[in-house]
Amino acid sequence: MLQQAFDRKIPKCRLDVTVVIDDTAATLMSVMCDNQSCRIAVKLDNGFHACYLKEKDKESSHSDVESKVLVIADLGALGENGCLDMLKTDYDKVIDEYSNHPKKQILEKMVSIAYTGEQVRLVLVELARKGLLFKSVPNKSVLNKKDCFTADYISLIESDNCSHYVNTDFVLRQLQLENCTAEDCKIVYDICNTILKRAAHLAAAGK
Image (cartoon, rainbow, N blue to C red; front, side):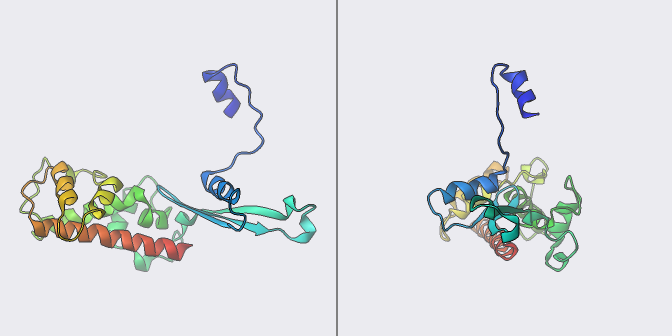
């Protein structure tokens, strides 16, 4: 299939594919070139995967090279059996329900950057609806649109200090939320910080 794709785009390019690996395994292998003691790699972005080096049984290996095997674990799939239900918030349930694959990749939806922004947005919308945040959220506000609050926004907000919320104010203006108070900015900052900490703790437990 890879050669067929090249034939369509670059007809004269011939491939001799020896092995196809995913980016988590590639991360571990590249680090091991400089640090032979490395045995585990973790990739946490839009997904949540880990890879580790495992010794094979002596009976099944015929050389030093064959004595080791890379094991790739899809940690994002943890929770599909309900073991994480006690940790799920109402926001997690909404994200799962309206995702492309409900009831799948549960931990991934709780920790990856593909979903943390939407977690923040849902919290902000509920607080605004209850009159606890912002004076009002106009219908034109981008905040009302699913997935409008990106991981980039969270990173920008996290770079603020606790006395000046310049970046937080900038993000809120991008969402057409004008005249936000310093208290509004502080609450938004705290929400982002809390959601990131929860994601970090869950990811660490998953490993």
